[in-house]
Length: 339
Length: 299
Image (cartoon, rainbow over all chains, first blue to last red; front, side, top):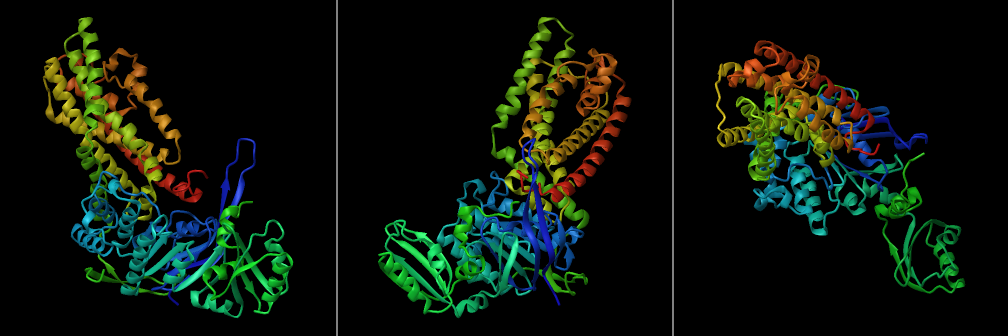
C-alpha cells in the first residue's frame, strides 16, 4: 500500500523548564499517533488549540524530532532521512511573517524558490501563474511589508505551492483571514488538489467548516490523541442516528446548569452557551423521546422555550460527542496535555 | 499549475512508510547548483535591502566617520606621525565589517527564527551552510561599499597619503581577513541559534572590547606581545595590521609581525572558523530539532 504520510506510535513530549528551584514539567503534545494518509488525499487534522496539530506538522516537516515512534513522508523516515523528505515537501503556516519586508512579493517568492533548486525561469513562470490564480498579480512588485494580513497570507500560499511539493502541509492556513479571503484560499486549495491528483495535502484547522468543506478525510485530535479518523460524511453519519437539537431558552438565573440536563436519561451531550438575553443549548440525544425530559426540566424551573430546532449533525457535533465538550470550551479552559 | 514544465518522473524507493510511488515532479536542481543558487538568493536581500533602506548612510558612514574624526584630531593634537591618520581612516573603514558581522551576521539566525524564516530554511532541501554563506556574501558586498565610502571620504578630508607595496598581497590579506571574519560570524550565528534575547546583549558586550583589541584606531604593537598575540584570534586584528603595513610608508615599522606570518595565520584562521562554523551549525541544528527550539522560544 502506498502512503504519502504514515505515522506509527508517534509521540512527542516536551520538557518545560520551570524556575531555578522548580522541577521541569512535561507536556505530552502527541501521544501514540497512528495515521495513514494516501497519495492524492486532502487530509484534515481537526482539533482545538493545543491539541498537538502543529507539533505533528513540525515532526512531519523534519523541524522537530519525535520522542518515540516513527513517521514517514513520501516513504522516507522524517527523523533519519530528512534530506530525502525535504525536497518533496513544503509548508504554509497561518499568520506567518516569513520573507523580508524590503523585498517585493516577486523577489521574496523567487528567493524561496531558489532554496528548492528551481531555475529562475521556471520559478518566475510559477510565481506569475500562481499570483494570478490567488488574485495577487497586481501586487507583484509591492514590498511585502506593505501587504495586508490577507494578502500576505496569499503570498505565503504561493510560496508553498510554487515548488510543486509531493506533500504539502498547511497549518491553519486561513488563521486571521476575513471571511472573503478565507473562502478564496479554501477554493484555491481544493482546486489545486483536484488539478494535481498525485499530490497530498495535510491541513490542520480548528475551523469545523473548513475541515468539512475541504477534506477527503479528517482526524479529530485532542490532547495529543487521535480520537476518530474518517471522511466528514462518515463521521457525521455515525451521529445520524442520534437526535441533535438546538434550543434557545430564557436566562437560567442560577436555577439550572448543563449538568442537570446531562443527568437526564437519553441525553448524550450538552453544550451550554449563555448569550445576550437568552441561553443556548446544543443537545445530542440518543433518541428524540429524550427531548421530553429536557422540556419538563425547563418547565419545572420556569424557563421559557424561545426556539427549538432539530439539526443535521455537523463535525462540531462529532467533536462534542467524542470529547464531551465543544472546541470553544476546551480553548477557554486552555486544555493541554501538561502534566 | 497545469502548465508547469513537469519533467522527471521519479520512483520513490520502497520504505517502511510505503510502497514505490510514481510522481511526475518539476525539475529541481540539487548538489552544487542548489548550493550556489541558495548563496546568491540569500545574499540578494542584503544587497537589495541596502539600496532600498538608506539609513545606512547615516548609521554606517556618518557615525564611523565621526569616530575617525575624533581620533584624527587627537593624533594631530599630540603631533603623532602623519601615517597614524591613515591608520585611523583604514581602521574606521574596517569597523563597518565588524559591525556587520556582529549585528547582521551573528544574531541573524536568531532574528530569522523570530521572523519564521529559519523553519522554512531548515525545512527546504538546501544546506543551512549555503544560507549562512549567502548572508555572509550579501553582508560582505554591502559592507564593502560602505567601507569604500569611509576610506574615500576620510582620505579626502584628512589628505591621507598611501604608498601601496603590493596590491596582490593587499587583496590577499583583505580576502583572507574577510573569510576568517565572516567564518567567525557564521560560527557565532550557530551559537546564537540557541539563545533568545540574550543574543542582543552578547552583541552589545562584544562591540567595544573588539574595537580596543583589534586596534581599529592604533597599531596593536602598542600592546604587549602576548596581548597582541591573543588579540590576533580576532581576524580583523591581523588583517588590519597587515593592510596598514602594505599601504603606509611607516606601516612595516609599526607592524606586529611580518605580513607573511600574518597571511599564514589568517589562512589558518579562515579554515578553522569556516570549518568550525560548518560543524557547529550541523550540531546546533540537530540539537535544536531534538529540543524543539527552532520554532519554540519558551521551551
